[in-house]
Image 1 (cartoon, rainbow, N blue to C red):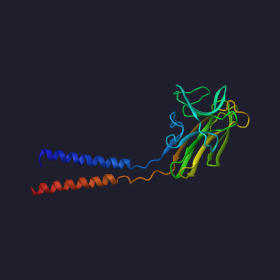
Image 2: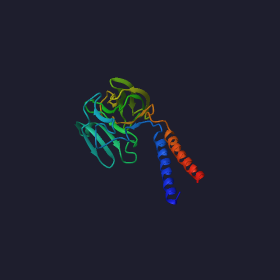
Image 3: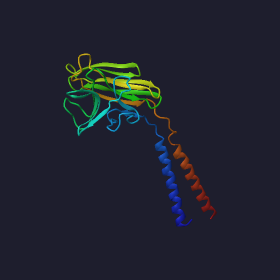
Image 4: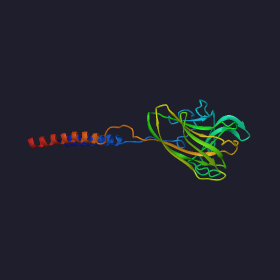
Length: 242
């Protein structure tokens, strides 16, 4: 075999091996994770990252309808106005550090409306399956707020943030079976004693319990190695005949 053929054959074999390794790498099992804070968007309030939306009230079709941004925040808000701005709202801390009242960048700041309408973060299930819903609520101001999580119309978690007495996070970790299109909502209300200073921080993540169905790892490599072995045996026979 001349030098050109040797180089060409070597290149083909190398390419096949790399293709097999790529196939094996792509076949690794993966869990899907949605992070409400990391996914937060100023560009859209509908199907953010395919699943999130920011709403006015539980099980509501009404979206928070305006967005404000500056160097420190992205704020989606409703149309109930006051001297402190529009409510309800959901805000992301984009400052890269803590903002007043120990508002850390991992938390969305949620505040109910003047008339008692809850601030609601909605997640819509993209596929049918079991999902792990985990995270925590935590005071940002001296909030006295009711917090809750809903699967459709079913209340699956409830708590009360009393920032005047306790600053400990209220954690949740719940497994939920959801059909594609089902909704899970995280809500913050005024706690029944007025809406002022009821900012609550939320860290919410939703992860698939079962990994996505993918081809069995290693099959790509085994197939390619079979091709490589065949080529090698063919070359060996030619040398013996020569």
